[in-house]
Amino acid sequence: MSSEKGLSAYDEQDLAGAAGLKLGIVVSDWNTEITNALYLGAADTLRKHGVLDADVQLVRVPGTFELPMGAKLLLSQKKLDAVICLGCVIKGETDHDVYINQAVASGLTQLGLLSNTPCIFGVLTTNNEQQALDRAGGRFGNKGVEAAVTALRMALLKKSMATTPNKIGY
Image 1 (spheres, helix red, strand yellow):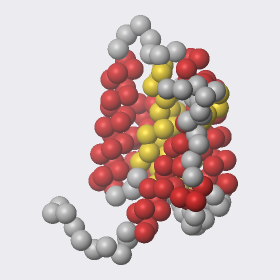
Image 2 (cartoon, one colour; image 1 turned 90 degrees about the horizontal axis):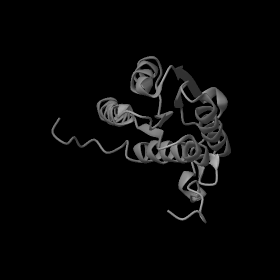
Image 3 (cartoon, one colour; image 1 turned 60 degrees about the vertical axis):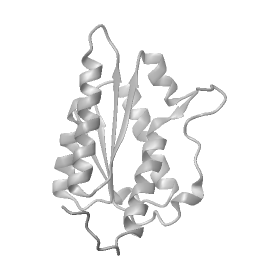
């Protein structure tokens, strides 16, 4: 990956019509400095594209592993167009990061498919703290911005296809 380009560049025209969307954000408290930076990037991006603060529901969970359950609890209480899940797992001396990242990715995928609501994986999976900082507003942009853009694009895609009544056999 080139250090010349930040990861958070996107075409703003893809997000026309985002005003009025209802979104959830679930943030892990583990690695708080990093996850708060991700949250600020996501929240600023939503505001930039017309999403009101009142239309965003924030839930905090203890760690990244709890993101899918936080998203599920949020979806059980609110009608949302998408849920952004933000966390940070830094590799340590054991393989805990592999198990956590795989479980969270799988959990969010399943939740999104079963709930028919996009559940966005905005989790940094880095080898060290510096790599995380570089991706939480540092030299590689802010993954929180990317997660918000993904949530908006998926919510708008779902909205644009809402009139299609076809099922795929389920």
